[in-house]
Length: 535
Figure 1 (cartoon, rainbow, N blue to C red):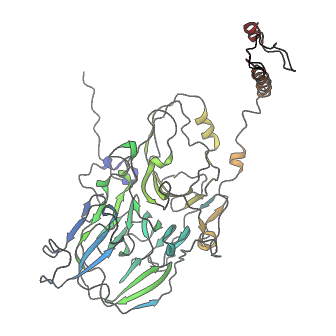
Figure 2 (figure 1 turned 45 degrees about the vertical axis):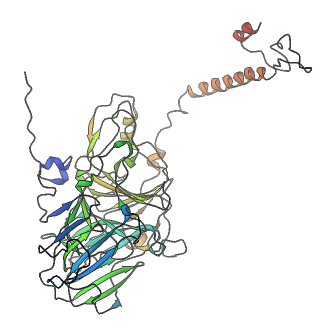
Figure 3 (figure 1 turned 90 degrees about the vertical axis):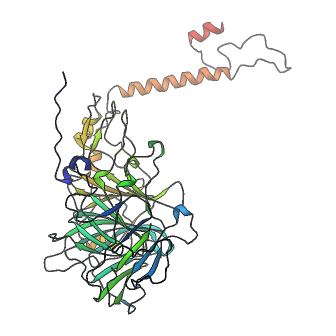
């Protein structure tokens, strides 16, 4: 008799799905996403607002009747290997060079990009740290992205073309007639609260909590609040001298983790009114300057290339894990990685911790205590998170420096450690936490240490680990066992020492006729079994 089939109904809330496929969508985007996209990691995409504006067969044509200007943006060296050679050609109404020059600008943001020990503005945090949700703008303030971006920590310097910085943003206003251009590094943006509508030179990206977006160095963009969204908050990881890319899969094979086909790229889009005054705030070497011009920078009618912003839905992550025993290293959850100058050590990894099955048998499923070499910064996007205290909430983050000992605690950990039968279970349902893991040692800004007002130094009370019982040395039989082991080691050494007194040839090189007695030269008597063998 065929068992009754339980019909699977579509889920409606992306934050409550086990995986994107629970939504039963036939489109690669969530239901509320209004935009069209092109799919495929690393492709040389192309797009045009008006058919025929994208030249065929060449990059720099003569005027073909549309009056557009050819403009190229390179992301790599001209002679970079083909697989690493990245650039984009744009065909726009006005060239980016058409402006009224650069000038200084004051913003309410706190930007710091020099993370060298010589900089007195940045300091290490030696202990574990945790930040409560970062404060949102007040109702009587108007804070857009240029005013609401704040650096927390980092390592290196963009001028040296190597390093990383992490930021938070809190905004309650869209960028009106204003754009942003980061000439230092690549932004990996993770919204935590509120949907952001990102307009780039190459098209638009609708990015909401549970999704991420990468905007390459030099690409101009603006961040608007999506319709009906009053406020937004999120996290940004910026890399210098490197780029965010997919990790190698090794024995996993050709598919798994973040699959290339799930990365979405924009289609060409231009502003309805291109003849309006615009300010372009430029971040260069960690400092803000501004360009003024009399036209919109979002006037790219057609483009083709592979240096293009993209987005990815973290609920599509195809997680892998142990299906037999033990706790798999967290690197198995890497979404994107950024290489360092050392080919064996990444500059940074961006990791996902979301709903998945936990099926390891005969194993302590909780993470073992560890002192990893990497710096770890975690942020809870939604749900209960993976924090060590009640202060680790959506909108906050936590930090542990390299080789800082940490791990589980409390009754839950003790319960997990009991010898028991492990049942398969689903974990982290309705939750999502991300982690930026770096091989670099982080230094922290004044904003992170003081100005934000939500830092908890030594966020985890040492007593939560001090209170873990010593179930080994406190046991009454442990001393007897250790004494027996010590005595056995002495006897084993004496037994081995006997063989070092044996010589099969005498001083003249002649064979010895008998073995030395079992008790000579101060050697103690060996076991009766050995004596029986030799005698």
